[in-house]
Length: 299
Image 1 (cartoon, rainbow, N blue to C red):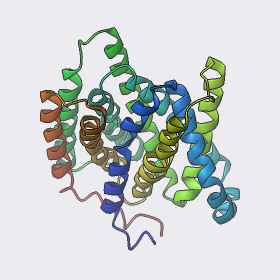
Image 2 (image 1 turned 60 degrees about the horizontal axis):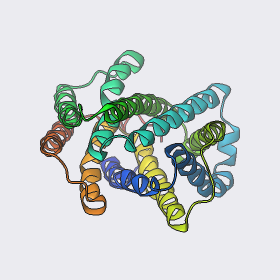
Image 3 (image 1 turned 180 degrees about the vertical axis):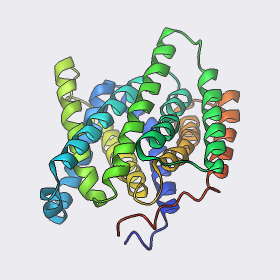
Image 4 (image 1 turned 180 degrees about the horizontal axis):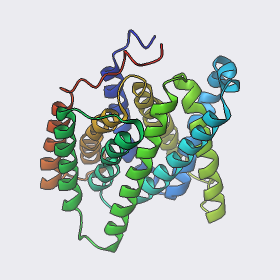
């Protein structure tokens, strides 16, 4: 479907819904697999699934990439690897609600960086929505602080994942102005996969010998949250500012918390409920801002 016919906000909704399943699949896989191995297989399986399509449909586009574009794609892949390595590890140390919310604070970093790097001055509605949504994130995150050293380390790792994710989205915003979705995500996902596999081997994280059920969780993680979720968000970057895409992605903690309750038996706290309400309010406010960049996107 062409970019002109498919609404950017619809792509965001699809991406957020798919991404919301990630924390549950990860928690289920962590029953017998180390976090770093999960991150490595998530990107490796996704890259292998996309490889035949990318090589068959986008080979000429990949060959036409300039040296600068390759360097940016490699940097984006490195940031994506750091994002998943830190965030998935955080899920083993702190609650789903706190981890997913703290890793979703990247709009704060994206908004500030977009202003200085791209001169994208946010409108008043965007600023207010950003403040309200980040406040909601803080409410949920603070509700999980003070639960012990492991929780604190997990919270900090999730925050590091949010910072890395901000850089990943900012680079994607720049490259997606010229590249097709597949022409962008394939080299980026592949770079992240290679780096995470190398890191897993260096640290001695077992990559094989796991049960069929665990491999099922990994496959679903690659297909749903990665290929559908992240790719939908990257697709939206061609039409919407990086600040708005990452702000809208703050809806992910709400879906993740609901799945954690239904599948993992992990009920949300009062802080999670209050913070979730603030996040929804922030997204609603920000959506009033005219941040669509369809008229500036390369057709």
